[in-house]
Image 1 (cartoon, rainbow, N blue to C red):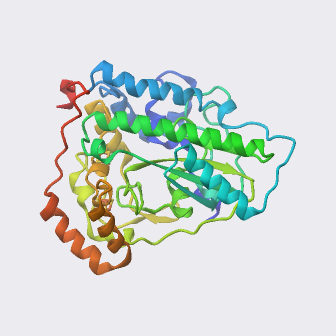
Image 2: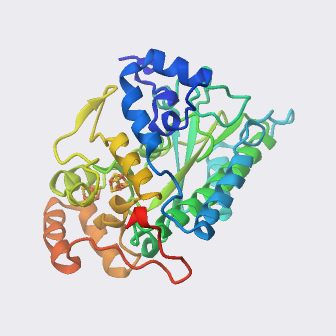
Length: 367
Ligand code: SF4
Ligand code: SF4
């Protein structure tokens, strides 16, 4: 299968589809080509929707982060002309510098891969920036991708599906957006093309890029799972032509662990996470999340859910005993079996922690 056959069209993401406005030219065009999706997408649009399950004072925390991300997601902020003066350093030196600067800016994990063209969206699907119209073809032929990982607070994430999880997610996405935009600007100032990809403006898929860059592996839940933070992190990316040294994908035992563990699939209130085997998706073997069921649940409760993150054994707080056990789990099948047996005995069934005291009670549709 060629890379262009493997590319995903951003118009087909459920986030793009739910935002189509009935009667608009984009709506008419999309459902003329995909009539089979109209009924299910109308159902998603008819649900109470994002923020409806939260107190307005809390939802506006997420809204303010999203507004700033929109500003720094504009085509002028994520991309630009490189400086006409090239500053060149040996590859190993500039790679070390880029990684150190990304961490200094706030990234917790940094890895570098060759940019696989299959991980670039084929067409724009979001209706955010007029300069990137819905359905326009994406041309991104950078050679490298810098994957940036940002830790979420596991104590707050373990309040999922309460809305505090969504506030934390918005705050961490904002940090990831700022760092990607500054890093891309820095690389352009050295005279090389670079583009940031973050929550408000992606041209490339952050999760498979992070896998290629050695940050972790793709888990059953559809998220990246890292040795350091489990799936309790958010990602942004910078793509560039600056010559960099590449990292290698890692084997930390996640495929084996997720094969045996189905905790997230059992906890998921919408049945979105498969309990069975991987399937082939555009030529890649993976567990396939049902995004329609997942987002329908979000729109029903009126906030993000995130229970698949809060319940994952890899995402426990950063304590010595957790670091020790994940160290063993990355190395041996036997350790993975033992940990998986011990986990429910020690932690029991997933139960959300209470929301922090500064959050208001949620509204009725999320009870
Ligand atoms: S966010 Fe919630 S509904 Fe969606 S897959 Fe995770 S657990 Fe399931
Ligand atoms: S909860 Fe278990 S099955 Fe799900 S992603 Fe985490 S380790 Fe894998």
